[in-house]
Amino acid sequence: MKTMLAAFAFTIAVSFGAYFVLDGMGFSSAEVQSAPSVRLD
Amino acid sequence: MNLKMIGACLIALLTFAVTPAHSEDEGQRASTGGAQTLDDILARQKGLEVDESFRRENLGSSDNAQPASSSLGTLGGFSSSDIYRGIRYAEADIKVSNNSHAAEVLVQDGGMSWLLTREGNIRTFAGYGIGGIIIALAAFYFMRGRMTIEGGPSGQTIERFKSFERFGHWCLAGSFIMLACTGLLLLFGRSVIIPIFGHEANSAIATFSIWVHNNIAWVFMASLVAIFVMWVAHNIPSKLDLVWFAKGGGIIGNGHPSAKKFNGGQKLIFWMTIVLGTSVSMSGLSLLFPFEMPMFAKTFAMINTVLPAMGLPTELLPHEEMQLAHLWHAIVAITMIIAIIAHIYIGSVGMEGAFDAMGDGQVDLEWARQHHDLWVEEEQAKGSPIRQVGDVR
Image (cartoon, rainbow over all chains, first blue to last red; front, side, top):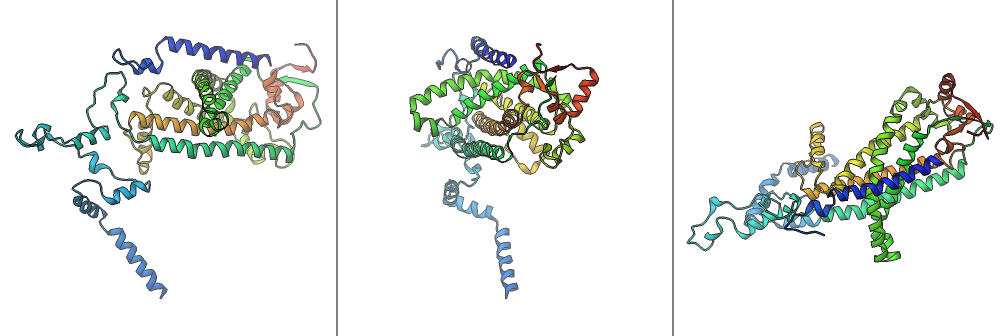
């Protein structure tokens, strides 16, 4: 059961990591679809 | 009499079959000055396919430009209707200020059919499919009962899955369950959550769901690869699987069919997970990066190469790609949910001793002999340790 709980904790941690990393790298749709002349956020 | 009737019917059918519908269409088209006809409108209202080429390709031409001195001369051969048709069928040369080529498409009419399919067939499939498998498994449980270890547990255990295998399995399982739940919340938000809890609650639930869905998907994709690498060698189909299926996994007849590490049913779940999991991941990536990873036009072109009769469209607008990716994503995901519910049943309440394999990795030796006899022989030949229940590890 410890392995199962560790996997769930890892899953949650990676999800938050993915959010912050991808958002920080400018992968949000708002950034990708916009340009200096167009603001979508 | 009957023969005459049949002959008359055949002649009538042949007459209809050889009647040049094309020329009739052209005649009607000429009567409207090239615009759509009553038949076009009626066909569209009935949801039938309408050949739009008569206006899709009627976009004006500078060759027809009137002299600048005439009343239409300043339009240079392109009437307002020609320009609108160009916009309507995404043929016009549109320039936009943002980075997305999808923004160059000003009119795209696939939205309603996407919405109706999502709210119609997709929800129906999800409701009946998921509800049906739960009812079927409950009925099976009450009729058959829990599958027990014949003769009872032996009191000795053998390690079935190592910790890294269980870790990979639970990463895949945990992420899949969260993806399934949040996906269903998004699918049934308007039809179930809003009528019961209201718009504000649905807004909060949908915002949470899409955040979880988008970010937990990476764990699902990574663990899918890990699972494939770890277990593919044990999941190559063999003749043993045919015997396993013929005996219904032990439900038909007496005794348990022989199996190695994975039996026929488990191999089926494995390959279903890999194939459908890959497909749902591909369409998911297409949705995660809107308009950046179109894949349906290329897929359709490949299918047309193998099956030309399919005649699938190979030129799709960016929005059509997204609509198809979304519908395909839902169809594949719902199919997986139905199969995985059965997998969860047999791995928990449906079979005594099965959960231990993914719980602490130690399964009862008698359970292992009954369900995976050849695997136990292999493990014992390798000298894998047998433990007594209650041993401190």
